[in-house]
Image (cartoon, rainbow, N blue to C red):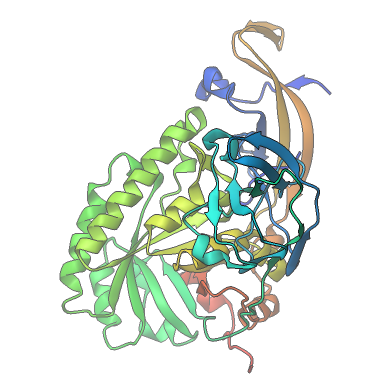
Amino acid sequence: MAIRLTLSIFFSFIYLNAINLNTIDLKEAKKYSQLEVTTYANGKQNITFLNTKNPSYYTPTTSTLVFQKKPKSLQSNFGTIYLYDLSKQGQYLNVLNYDFMEIEGNMSNISIGLADKYYFKKEDHLKLPLKHHFNLQKLFGKIDLSRLKYLVIITASGTPPPIKKIIFKNNQEYTSLENNHLETWAWNPEYVTHSHLKKQPIERIYIQMKSGFQKALKRMKDTNITIYGLNGSPEDIFHYTHLLKDIDTLAILKKDFPSIQGYQVDIEPYLLNAYKKDPEKILNTYLTLIQKLKIYTKKHELKLSVVIPFWFDHLYVKDKNVGFRVIDIADEVVLMSYRSDINKVFDISKILLNYAHYSNKELRIGIELMKIENESHTVYKITQIQRTCLSSGKITDNCIFLDKMNQYTVYGKEISFYKQTEKLKYLLSHPIPFPSFKGFVLHHFDLLSTVPPLFYTDK
C-alpha cells in the first residue's frame, strides 16, 4: 500500500532541469495551473500536476452557520428573482457537515428554492416547500450539497422579500465509542495466525489473495473475525480479470468459511506514469473498473470495499468529485488518512465521512504503523510552457517555466504512529463524531507485534 502523504492545494522565475520531461505530455500540462515536486529521503522525485481551477468549496467548522446578506435581484417572466449568495471568495458552500437549514422571515407570497453551482448553466434551482425548517439529508441527491451557491426567492411584488436569516445547523452529536472497531491489512497470508491476532482486539482482517490465502483461512476458521479478500495494484485498471477470479474464488470459499463477507481493492491509479500525462482518462478508467467490480461482487453476494486516499475529496473528473463517486459505487470505503494527530485525522477525513453519512454508506479510517521518512514538497505555479529554451547550455524543446509558490516538509512522525503508542491509544479511545465511521484499519498485520495491546478506555 503506497502512501501519498498530501494533496497540495497551497497557494524567482525558474525552470527545473531535474524534471524528467520525457514522461510529461506538454500539451496535457497546459491544462494545469500548478506543479508539485516531492523529494523523498532516497533522493527520488515525483511530479504531480495540480489544477486549482477545479470546482472548489469551503467547509465551515461551526455547529451553526448564519447568513444575513442583501440579495441581488434579476428580472424574469415569473417576477423578481432574489439571489442570496452562499459562496465565499469564489468558493461554493459545502453543507455536508450540517443536518438542517432554517429560514427566518415571512414566507407569504413567495417561491423559494436552493441552487448549486450549476444555477446559471441550467438556469434552474431546486424548488422547496414553503416552510422554515429543512432536513438537508432529504435534499441529498437532488442538489449538490457540497457546492451550494444561492438561496433563491421569487416574488411577483417587486419588493425585497422579508428574509432575515439563513441558518445551517448541526443539531446531532455522535459521541458513541461503539463503532471504534479495530481492523488490519495482511499483505503476507503466511504470517496470519490466530495467536498473533489475539494480542489485539481485531474484528476484521483484509488478507491479500495470493499464495497462502486458503491456508490462512483454515487457521482462522474457528475465530469470530470477519475476513475480506484483498488485492489491487495501479496496473489493474487495464488488466483486471484476476480480480474477477478472486471474487469467484471467494464466492466458492465462503460456503465453507462463512466469515468471508467481502472483497477489497487497493488500486491507487495515480501511481501510474500514464496518470501524469492524462489523469482524467486514468481516473475515468479507474471508476469504470470499480463499477464493474461492484456489479460482480453483488452478483456473488459479497460486499465491495475500496481503499482511497483522503485527498480524493478535492479531485474532480468532468466536474464529478472522485471521492464522492467511489462512495456512491462501493459498499464500503477505507480512507487512507495517515496522520498521527487526532484533530488532523478528522480534519482531512470529515468531508468524505459526512458524504458517506448522507449516502448511508460505511467508512473506515486507515492508520499507519510503519516508519515513514520525511518528505520535501515544493509547489510551483506554471507560468509558461515553451517548446524551445536554453537549459544547461543546450537548446531543448522540453521546457516548463515555473514560479515557486511554496515549500514545506512533511515529517514522518506526523504521518505514522511509529513509536507513538500513547497517541495511538488516545485516538482509538476517542469518541468519533461521525455516524458513518465504522472503525480503524491498522497498516499492517505484520506490525501489530510492535505495539502493546491496544485497549479502549471506559466510556
